[in-house]
Amino acid sequence: MDQTKVRDLVDEALALNESLYLIDFVISENNKIQITVDGDNGVPLSECIRISRSVDNNFDREEEDFSLEVSTPDIAHPLKVNRQYIKNINRILKVKTSVEEFEGTLVEADEDKIVLNWKAREPKPIGKGKVTVSKAATIAYKDIIEAKVKIVF
Image (cartoon, rainbow, N blue to C red; front, side, top):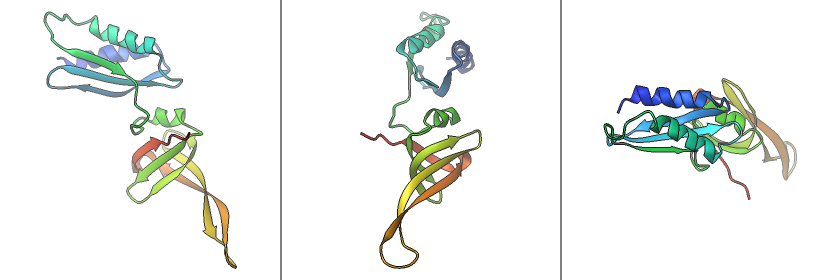
């Protein structure tokens, strides 16, 4: 299976809807093509079908034996692309870096970094008891090992 040709076909299909972007693209040894796409406003099933057909229609199944799967990312999977962070602003993220873990509301995401806010209970500077304080962390994408959206019911 020609990986470059498949990738070009996927890119062409995604170009028709600029709110969509590629998350993952894998061709296994037994020609199973797995394409994962996401969108700034979600991905309707019709778009997954359209992308699948634009790839499938450009190959002759008599010559190439392959399976094709176009899907959207599972909420349990980590964020992989910067645009996914922008899409999830105002949601709670669990972020792991090599130094520590954070859990907070994503309040900002740009090309280089994200900003998380959360509240924490800390001992009072004077006296007994605790006080609630607001905390923030600015984390560069390059420092993020894993980031997942926390599902709150």
